[in-house]
Length: 284
Ligand code: PDD
Image 1 (cartoon, rainbow, N blue to C red):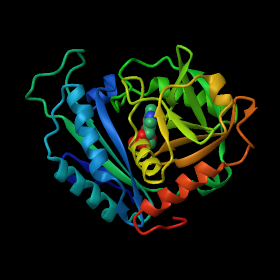
Image 2: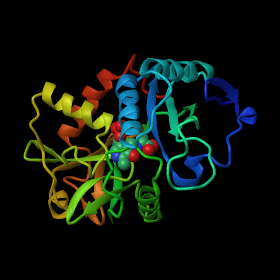
Image 3: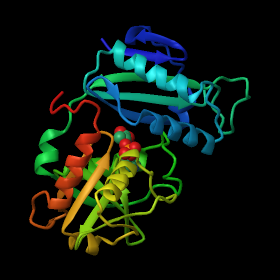
């Protein structure tokens, strides 16, 4: 049975009581994080929690815990849910108040919730790669905030799924920004390209790990946006995220990418990533 964290308490699902007036429910007025767990250990937890606090600050919300306290909550959720491989979800909303758009009075406490879930690594996708579909990026201009408002992402992912694709790749003003729940990298002639960390993308923690791995492995990186046409002509494409890790994209729309198989830089990055995983495990 899943154990949830609700405002300082660890509870089973039937004991959870969230107000229908929660602003997360009315407005998506909140922020969240997904943290991977490998072999019972949190992966890059400090980075995720730091980003949670940055997201909260960007929407002018104060989290009533310290970063260390939330890391401890995440650790407790790993234990309580007996997670070997899976993830922790943490969410903070601006609390429960009658539905008016402006912020409630500061006396209304923000609501911090979380849970842990067993979730195996996407081994087939990692080995074989996935297909992706280009979708117009109609989201707002603060995609750097990990906000609960995910309608643009949800609609794009659904559009991709309906065409048998694992991910939607956003295009804004003729350039590729990121995936609906991932970042995108392209490799051409030995150089790795990705959109810079601006307001138009979420600066993924996995993205940052991959940038470090490129540096450590002498793989040159240019943080520069590229177009769909340039994407079609890449030797390799990958998406990165907490759950997708380093997943090859072998088809974009109806075009095969490179050889149609995971390429050499992708494999090198996957191997380097695997070495970062706490007590590397191959399955769940
Ligand atoms: N999504 N871009 C978007 C829009 C995302 O939603 C995510 C992650 C990423 C990758 O970020 P990271 O490497 O820190 O996971 C990029 C999570 C996994 C989700 O919403 O489920």
